[in-house]
Structures are given as structure tokens and as C-alpha cells.
Length: 579
Image 1 (cartoon, rainbow, N blue to C red):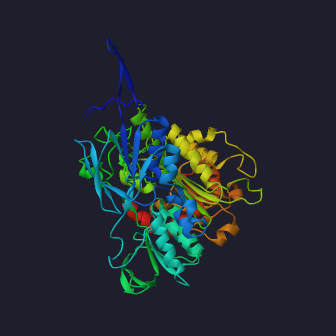
Image 2: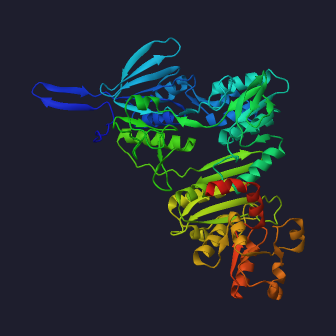
Image 3: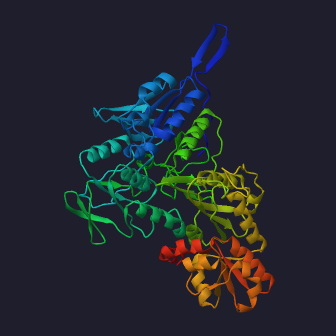
């Protein structure tokens, strides 16, 4: 379908000189936006800045049109103390500043594309009306998945201001409250942390075998450890199956747990009800299909937000990414498109970050499980650097996993788990991916350094050094989940840590030869394939270089003993993923 001409700024006055004088003809433009919050309100306010004269109406079926939905869990936990701090704008403030006609408690129930009208129902009075549009923007977002629990169990989601009002009402009515949280994703983990912060006894129920599934198993292990350290009862491979009695629910593992409150954070699905009714194209991912300017298959209708399919930066396919940053960015883009200055949207990297009990979890791009499922050749780098110079007080460690295209050296994804400095590094990697920098090019990034902020060799530079060694063949790595197969084929493990480190914990069957003694003890090593390792990989690389130059067939265990130890906690998970 051809695109319509872009809207001009209105009113437009056409002056026509005739024998009878001059007359004026005014054109009137009406833009309707369905849904507020991030995408819808970004579109509305940007449109007003671009066009002072257009009529802009926002229909929001909820009672709050602009609120900090990402802050909701932290209001439950008391980190955000005042409820009104969550309410960013009201219909009155939006009318005063932006001349927007915002109608809350109002639902758009039907779109007539031929007539260019929407049917609207006032949810308080049940009255219906019809509104014409010149351009229509759908920002309906996503809704909670249904069916996560047995239907007779009352549950709450954690997506709206009404949700936190209900949750707070329950918690304030019980002296020593207990809660079950279903789902260990972004919202579920934030809910767990804030409930614990409030003194609630929490059981986290995860349907699958791993917590926080966007991470690969060895990267998720520290998250599971931190949850259990803080007293959270984590149940993996488990679902909620029923209600035994008031305040108690039954789980699929045959146990019952106390639950004054059940929070369903098992995920969301795109809200495409209106789009489907209107006959708009739905993408393969289940979200509303849009082109690079956020236009749907009807060029008069645009769509933004969590209900919309994005283009995956990894392979160009349609994907769902429910991130507030993208919703805001695309809301701005759709306003530009309607105003006549469209730009093609950048593909989505899926950059995200989460804090849980002092641990920061960040990720961007694809994980190993997805690369394996797609059959895409890749290399992996694990490092365990400190956030700043180790000699400066307060250094905190982090674990980084970098995934690299084996043919092009392109960065395909990254995961970081640790303390301070994680946010800085994931942002650098996201920018590098957006700029098209290869993994080896990370060696050349000139990053800010002072002992209290970083190391002279920043963790990002260190990733580049390892990646460059792999690309050049200077180093050959073996992943933790490949170790058993290598041993079965006759390889011998050589632990080059100190005797004290080896005594504190080791890989079964490994030979301990300290790196500092290695050159003098080469004769003790068999002439079979060797796998060397240290604690985190750096000494292992040095050992591998020594042995290679003395004629040994050697590989370095990527990420060392620390990565292997984290991986073996959850090894059955990856084995199933790789099957």
C-alpha cells in the first residue's frame, strides 16, 4: 500500500487571488493516540512540539496516563516512599503544558479503517462515542500472560499503579506477611527484592530449570546464590497448582507454601486486540508489524511500545523487546514520521539491566543458548575482572561473557554479573555493537581511567585482548561445558594455580603444576592433548603459550576454574539447551 503524503503543519492557509479578492481555506488535522505511559505519551508530547495546531487526543483505558511503571516494585519495597512520585503527569498537567486532550478511563473498542474512525467507551459511564482521525497511533502495550496459576488462586500483577495499591493493601493488613512470586524474570526478581526489603517471607516459583532465563546458565548461577543467601525460597522446575487453604498454595513439587499474596510475574504478551480487529498485519513474533517509520500495514495507522514487533539487530528478524527505552524512542520517532520527517528505526539490541540484592545483572544481544539453537558459529570469552584497580580500596569483581561471530569477529551479545561498574561496561558494549565495532577492536578503545574508576587495562580492553588472541589463533579456548567430552577423548587437565588454590577446590582428576614451576616440570606432562586452567583464565593463557611453544597440543579453559564451577551447578540446563 503506498504511503500517504506527510502531514503538513496546520492550520494551512491557502491564499487565492481572484477578481473578488482573497479568501482563506483552513485544513484541520486530528491525531488520536490509543494508550499513554511511555510510547503513547512520548508520541503525543513530541507531536505537540512539532505541530502547535494539530488536535491531539489520547485515550487511556486506565486511570493513570503517565506513571513510572519501572518504579512500581520500588514503591512496594519502600525505596520510593511517596506514591505521587510515581505519577509523572496528569490529564490536567498535560493539557496545561502541551494542550493535549487526555481522556482516562476510556477504552477504544473498535477501529473503522474505511471511515477513519474509532469507537470509544467511557468505562465509568459505559457511554460510547465515535471519533474521526487523520492519523492513528496504537500504543496499547502488553498484558500479563494468563494461565500462570490455577484459576481459583487470587493473583496480582505488578504493572500498574492499581496493582501496587492492591499489593500494599494486602501487606499492610498482615503482621508477618508471606508471598509467592511466579516467574524469575525482570519484574519477578524486582518484586522479590522489594518484598524481602519490606520483611516479607518470599517463595520464588520458576517453571523452568534456571532463574533469569535471558542469561546463560553459568552466568545465572551467582544470581541464584544471591537469592538464597538472602533467604528467598527458590523452587526451580515448579509451578503453582492450587490453593490448599486460605493463605496457603500448593506447588507441583508436592509441597505447600504460605502465601498471603501471590504475584504473577510470569511474563507478558503483546496486546494486539485492536490491531487484529482492524485487520492490521501481525508479525511472526506476535507483535503488531511496523515498518522502519513505525507505520503499520495501514499507512494512516502507526504503532509503538511493548505490543509492537521490533527488528532484531542480530539477524534482522522480528522480535519482541519490552523495554521502556525503546518505547520512548519509538514514540518520538512516530511523531517525526507523522510530522513528515521520518527516520528509519535502528534494530533492537535488547539491552537490559537489573539490580538484585546488591548484584547487578546486565545483558545485550544474543545469548549462547540462542546462538546454538540457530546453528550460528561463534566464539566465547569469559573474564572476571574488578571494576577498578585492585590495589585501590573497594574493588568489586564482575563476571563477563562476550559472544562473538566466528567468521566476522562481530560482537553478537554480552552478559555481565557483578557489583559496581557493570552498568558502565554493558553500555560500552552496546555502543560498540551499534557502531559495528568488532570484538578485537575493543583493544583500541580509549576509556577513562583513574584507580577509583577503572584499571589501566579496562575490563572492556581485556575482552578485546582475549578476543584478538582467539581471532589470530594465539590462543585456543575450551568452554566449561565442553570439558567432559574432551576428557572422554583422552585430554588431561593441568591446573596451573598455586598449591593452596588447588587444595581449596579443584576439578576432579586435574594435575596441579603451578605456572611459576611449569617450565622446569614439562617432562612430567604426558604428550596428549592438554587443557590448562587457572582461576579466571589469564594464567591459563600464559601457560598455554608456554606449552604450545614446547610442542604440546593445548587449550585454555575459558574463564578458568571460576566459570567451570558456576557452570557445573547448572550443567544439566545447558546440556538440554545444546541437545
